[in-house]
Length: 138
Image (cartoon, rainbow, N blue to C red; front, side, top):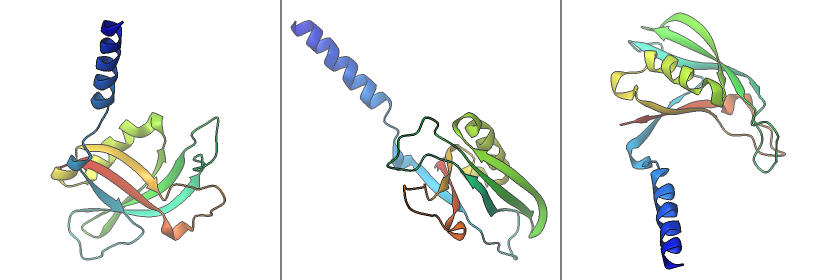
């Protein structure tokens, strides 16, 4: 009995701490709906959030949902392209690779991207309040 309890505690301990991501090593950069016209290099600007069908906090949903946004890319303050990005679990790796092409070298180890604010039940998000948050290893 003691051995099985010890084995259970050991497995529990390992599983809990194995999944613990050290958030101290993650920094964030935000893509907002503003452009700086005198910036050199690449600049990403959130043009608009087209749709947001993510499951609101406080609601049980069958599907987690997704959000779609148009990101504008500028190089040396000149428009380069518009890209529609779908934020969902199945596209996460593809999105991270796309963002990494346009971020500075030190910000390319992307761990997570997402649209904020996250919807809440009964609260309407104003379109101008949206932003894209990119978490990367420092």
